Structures are given as C-alpha cells and as structure tokens.
Amino acid sequence: MRKGFSYYDNVYLAYAFSLALFFLGWAALASQTTPLFFPSPWLVLRAFKEMIADGSLWGHMEISFFRILAGWAIGSGLGIPLGLLMGDIRFFRNLFNPYIQFFRFIPPISFVTLSLIWFGMGETSKVVLIIYTTIFIVTVNTIAGVMSVSAIHQQAARCLGANRLQIFIKVILPSTVPFLLTGMRLAMGNSFMTIVSAEMIAAEKGLGFLIFTSRLFMQTEKIFVGIISLGILGFAVDGIFRFTIHKFARSYLFFFKER
Image (tube, rainbow, N blue to C red):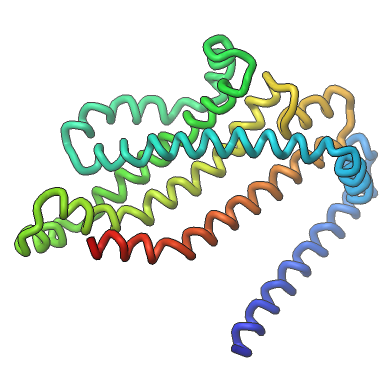
C-alpha cells in the first residue's frame, strides 16, 4: 500500500516539475520577443480567463468534442466489422483491400472542399471527415489483429470440436481486441488533427474556427488558447479511453471466452 502511494506521489511530482520547467522556458522565450510573435504564459492565461468568463471557450470545446466523438464512434463502428471480415475471410480481403490501401494514403484535408459541396456547411461535412479519418486506421489495425492469431490455436479449437463461428468468437475475437482498441486510440488522435482543418474552412464555432479567426485578427494569445485547449481535451479523452479499457477489457474478454 505504501509503495503504491509513493509511486503515484513521485509521478505527480515529476509531472509538476516538468510543467514548471516548461512554463519557465516559455516565459524566458516570450521575454525575448514581442507578444504578437510569441505571447507570454500570463497573456495566454488572461485570454483563457476572459474566454472562460464569457463562456465562449466552452462553446468552442463542446462543439469540437461533439464532432470528433460522433465521427470517431461511427468510423470505429464501421471499421471494426469491416476489419474483422477482411481479416477472417479472404474474399472480403481481396474485395476491399485495394480501396483501403488507396484511400488511407489520401489525407482528409484533401476532401474538405468536396465534403462542403456534397454535405453542405452543417455538421454532416465535419463528421464525415472524421469518419473518413477513423475508419481506415481502425480497419487496418483490426485486420492486423485477426491475421496475427496463431493458426495453431485455431487448429487446437477445431480439434476440440469448435465450429467456424465458435473459433471466431472464442479465439479470434478476444485476440483481436487489443489491436482494434489500439486502432481506435490512434484514430482518436488523428480525429483531433482533422477537426482543426475542417473547422478552419467551414465552421462558425469550434477550436479550429477559434484558431483561424484569431489569426485573422492577430490575436496570437487566443491561437495559443485554441491549441492548448485541443491538447487538454485530447489528453482528457485519451485518459478516459485508457481508463475504460483497463476497467472493462478483462470482463469483455472473459465474456467471450465463457460463451
């Protein structure tokens, strides 16, 4: 018990020390230039307080989070079954693989203008771009997970009388879970990068919109607010996702193995 407390205590101290060094370096660098070029931590903190007080920052963060979460969830929901099918059944792999390998190398920002033409200026165009960002990462990782399952394990299950569906549920799927979860986590990070470009071009609210409009009015401290807010939001979402994985992954795997 004492060891655990000491460990976490040291981790928090390391975080605090790292942040202190970061802000000292930031302040030192800012003192050597103008606020327009590189604002000090105090100017950025004041901008944070002002935007929190008038409620504008929460509005930007809320709409960006909704767009990311919606696109990421839908993209993961499409990518996981597609990856399972492609990884387990050669016909589907041969059928869809050329498209997966072609489109996953085209960045989402290439489709920003087309998404506006096809889906309009509303939320759909932004969410579709996040779906595009997510689906290929999740699919490829899921395929890798399915194909990494040892043939010996599958053969052993077959010798014990398991049919194809039982092998898929009790052998392949549990072994694939870490891969698809990793794909979802990576896709979440890419979703944050995509939302900025989407909101910069076609949005009236969001952190990308905040960064873009602040640039037009030369409000560098607000650009920093938008960037830091993206980092904080991403850090929090990733932490919640990792906590959820650690909390429920074992129960999930046990459920499938006991079926």
